[in-house]
Amino acid sequence: MGWGAALVAAVLAMTAPAQAQTAFRVLDFAELDGWEDGDQETALNVFRSTCGDLNDPEWQAVCAVAEDQTDARSFFEIFFRPVLMQDGADPLFTGYFEPEIAGALERTDTFRYPIYSLPPEIVPGEPWLSRAEIEETDALKGRGLEIAWLSDPVEAFFLHVQGSGRIRLPDGSVLRVGYGGKNGHEYRSVGEELVRRGVYQPHQVSAQVIRSWVMRNPGEGADLLRINPSYVFFRRLDRLPPDQGPLGAMNRPLTPMVSVAVDPSRVPLGAPVWIEKDGADPLRRLMVAQDTGSAIKGAQRADIFFGTGKSAGWAAGRVRDAGRMVVLLPIQKAYALLPGF
Image (cartoon, rainbow, N blue to C red; front, side, top):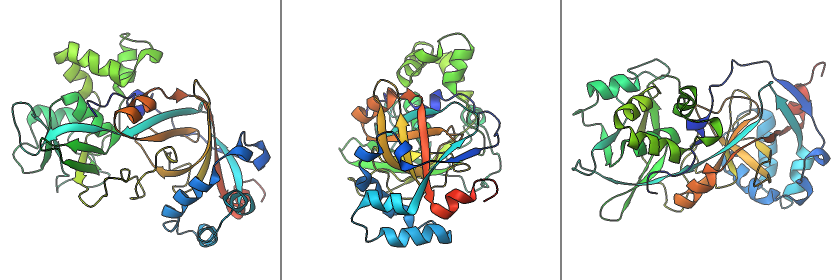
């Protein structure tokens, strides 16, 4: 999709605060704004796709029941309870997407910026070279780790942020790539850095604005991107059908407007979540927590998957809204969170 014209949620996210204690409150379904008019059927179908990966016995029980349900709304109301989780941080909804970017399998004068597969010496969880060290020393060059080459360093950067994408090759075919690992450094927001420098106000920063600034200031722009020490590596997804979304953290294809990225330290991956997003385009919808992101931290932080390509990118780019996220948990698990239960 061109260069990834959407507002990239992770690029704009401010640094997450230190993890605070989470408070829990069990709600009634009647307290969920829009629940009675919601589309629970689509969410149930998506829930089934990753439900089998939930190993907890209470999750396994509801997953078994989910297989033959014909009334989605009744299923959730009977076997789940809505739980509001709060950790003191302001709620924030953003959007993300799967970009489609022009690229090539060989380096050319046009396609000069590589994306790499994971170096074998990297140990998960242990810091390796930072982004600046990798780029300034050409630490990966000539090692046969190149998967593809892109025409724009900012496109490559945003592909790192998104973690997956479609690369449109010169012959018209598409190479799909997904997250293959990282260098063990924490993400740092370049959008926040531009705000810190006084270049823009928070409401002005978008992926479009960042790209434009980098292109107008090539030297400073390269340094700006390198303030983010995190560096993502990729893997080819040759067997992923073209009509399916990218793979999320649960290694299943994501579904537009149903899959959502959350903080797995607060929200269980695979759990249904009721989204009440405010802003210019309010959203009330049952979704499923099937993905994560390095900038998605906190009990009320969520990143909504909008789909693939330019239109999805523009739609995702408009989202930076307040609201509320309520997690649906099996009944026993919900009440077990309350003091004295």
